[in-house]
Length: 374
Ligand SMILES: [Zn+2]
Image 1 (cartoon, rainbow, N blue to C red):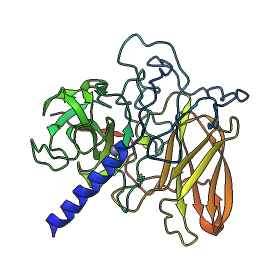
Image 2 (tube, protein in one colour; image 1 turned 60 degrees about the vertical axis):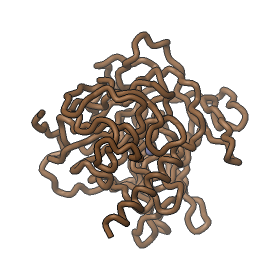
Image 3 (cartoon, rainbow, N blue to C red; image 1 turned 45 degrees about the vertical axis):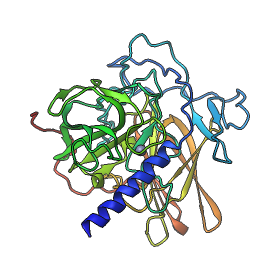
């Protein structure tokens, strides 16, 4: 029985990774602005300026349309504003980490891809996204080009290096995660250990037991394992280092400076979670629009505080309209996105929206908890 479930799971993972990599070719890397460490992130960034003409098929001037061979609808990638040409490969994260402007926020991790490469997730295949049947994505996919350096998202000890991470069998060359690295971090959250996982690498530079710091090169982006194209699959795990203990990386990896994150819990009137439901987010200033689906039913975990079932990271600060169609009627909510912060809402069927933040359950501490380095 266990074997059967495991095999099913393996196939599930296989499908999902396959699907992830069916994503279209990455857009040409566009440098993001270089932000110095120690910069103060608290001043609201200027809002995006409206008025310039978007490219055909795009809702805004920063949008690029890529037409995949196999899909009728073009996929849209939103490219951050170009910045100065970078002089070194390692860029600091857009916000210095750890960043926790709210008492329950925990942007503890830097981006695992440098800022002069594509370092943002595939927009339409986020954590909790589903492509096939009941299989749900347990990470985010960053479509950087093959050979791009993969960097440690935070300090810690390498606890898996190379083939076999998913199956737990060293040198398993059929492992769906391919060549992969797992790090147990030097800090935890609420007494629980934190792990990051980097999958489908072309090369692995580190060894089991090695201590790495934020930004240490772990290997190179590749397409090993079950995949049809190069990308980095990034997971955040908490509590235990297993497939079933992942959390949404967009709530853990610091957003670009001046940008924020929207999280929501989308429910039926009877409080049941609405699965795979599209949520539209539109900038009131620029008209730029995003669509994100609520989580699928399996293998994903909500944040202990937010209890969300949808997250969209990397939103420029500003005012937005959230839109959900329920019972055939579009219901809208006005929200504000703040730099480095998580804006939260709930939707409950015919009762509509609320912007009340969750009532915290009693917890001893929400601060990073140092764990002994081994
Ligand atoms: Zn993935």
